[in-house]
Length: 79
Image (cartoon, rainbow, N blue to C red; front, side):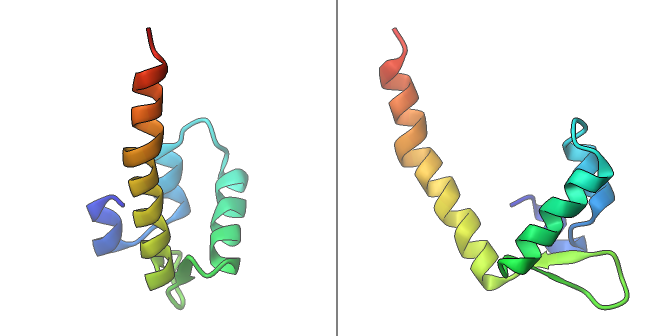
């Protein structure tokens, strides 16, 4: 959900910069899985991907779950 990805798209190189513990092959497989599930789409003749409408909804739901369930649950569990 980073703003720069909405403007200029995702690429293996950009994601690898954010996730330095992943190799280029691992990031490539992640991108392939996201594409097969219809969450991102490849822009023709480039190495860029953009979130589809389904992908945007999935990210929004994940952020809401984190905000409303996971973070309050962790706060209640800590002494």
